[in-house]
Image (tube, rainbow, N blue to C red; front, side, top):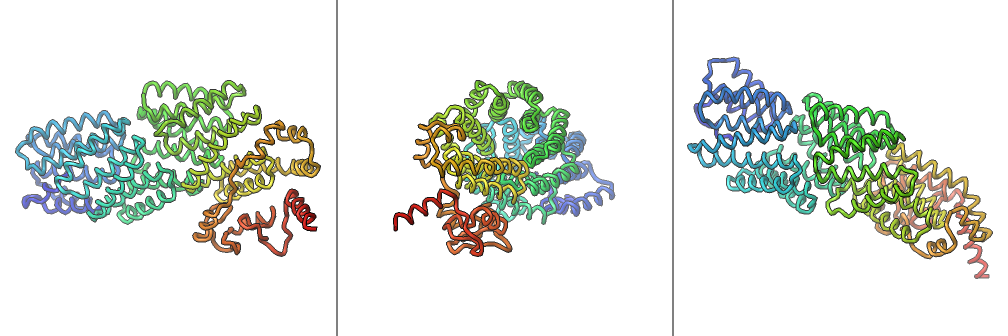
Length: 636
């Protein structure tokens, strides 16, 4: 809304100052002035309409969008008694903006068009005043198309708003348009373009000195980094944004950023913190009575509970979200609800209900014709097929997942899900077929997972990947490496309270411990390959070829040691090292818990093989002891 209206001398001083307070996010002070103005009474119709417009703006920035719509409808009727005037346009546009926040996209679009037609008839307005409204109309149209997942049209309108705002030289609004274009390119899957525009938006916002815009642009840039999988960077940007909005006491944006942070912490495996942030954001959104965003938050909360192994709580959250989506007729969000629900039901073992939910999702997918929803549907279809005992259905699941992986704009989170499930399917196939091509594929997918895990510092992904590598190490008869991978996965899961994974890894460790003596006995006796084949379910030819291949990269690299030394990161669990710790002379750091775990396992540094605790013996693996004996014999 233009500031021009509030600068003319005949305008009431209380409203001029109230507008200034709103722009500075001093909402309580603005509210007090507006109330004081209304209590005085005796105002002209123009001033009453102006006052009500300000109240709409105040309610908007407080996140009370339903109240904005109600008051705007009433105020628009009042404004029509003034004849053709620009206040009517402003009222329609703030109503449309509120409707967008409520995801009432079609209704918002109708109101925007109504405002646009009215503006065309106001030829007497100053060019700058006309252009400001024209820019806002283009900006709001962009969001209409964004909500409809039409990235090209969204970008087109956002760019038009940017062009007009650059002509006007209004930096704080230019920053808004640049950040919106960034989100359009994210929707399109063009991450580099999104990053460039988000960076430009932040620069302009900082030049404007407007704290709200700076916080907003930081938040959008954080979203781009989430899309890129750079979670540490995203968290830092969002936390900077959160500090700004806490200082401004802007509860709407605080709630929005808490939700975003909840998602980021879930992705790196810090589930307790994720749940706490989601629940804080949910309480704030309940205060705004914003049901559609409450549904979004409940989606994320359900997923964090699922990852923590609290499946009943996860189911409760997703069912609450689905109830809100149905109440509001939000079909796209309902489709997303089914995605979360299917994965929870599979984890619970309720496969029949998962299939029913998949059929419901298939109907929504056909109705919505949305590319992202279609990718999500295909992924869930693969998950359901993967649960089948029939090899034919598991093969179909594998085909679907591979097709998804070929999509250029597959988002970060779905990419991870596809890779994990492909690895799981291929491990099963490898054990059943002993096909080397399967082994090559598996190695390639694990490499992609490790790359994502290292770039994003996602403890959850690291943990799952090390667990897969432990299984592969057993297939290559490298027991030492298998134990190390299991230890590393277990330490990460323990440190970040990944409950489901802790239990899963414990079972793997227990199984290996039970078979350890058998493995060692077979190796000591140089047992025939038939005995090894019985234990590993691999034939002699495959075993020999596997043993010759450098399939797995060790956990320790020069780069990791350098990072561990410089940033004091534990070489095992990849977390920060605080308090008591062990620093090896080679530069590797270990937190107290991991140092103890390694002491119990083998009592050597993984980087240089030096003892960790010199008061205790080094527990070498049998093959190492045998190699040492053979080396000593050669020297004699």
